[in-house]
Length: 193
Image (cartoon, rainbow, N blue to C red):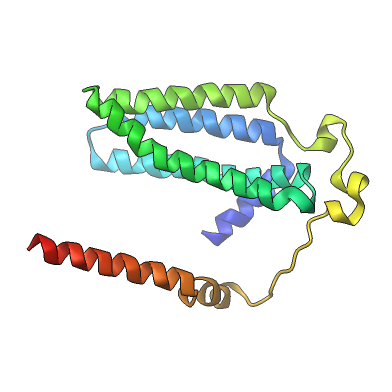
């Protein structure tokens, strides 16, 4: 929700990002491993929900970290690379799960392997990851680049619902995708009858 995103951004602004990243990844890896154990749908849903909450702390922290290290001139490209890597990981995950399933591994192992990898990356990030430049004894972006190093925010004070209507519900690109997906699904249903 929007309220929890604001809270997570405030937490990311106040804590060590290295520890936040590493800790969240370690907890996420543990929850991933535990997801392979339960046989009840409720337990599976609860673990998946908990893992989503933990992982959702990473996006605000990543944006704070990118904003602290890169000036305005290159920040957009860095955010695009970060976002692409997220989407690439989300696209590759089903392929990894399918490969693990193809090897006839038990459901537990399908969650164990990514969980252990996530824990290993979390430990690495906790030990060696970067934090904000000034916390590492380096100058701030404002010191290096002046106003060009400070985020230039052009925000509209429309409020939450007007923004949702403007940016989501009446966005022509989103509406086009919805129409394409709807007609594709409808065509699939007709061809299967």
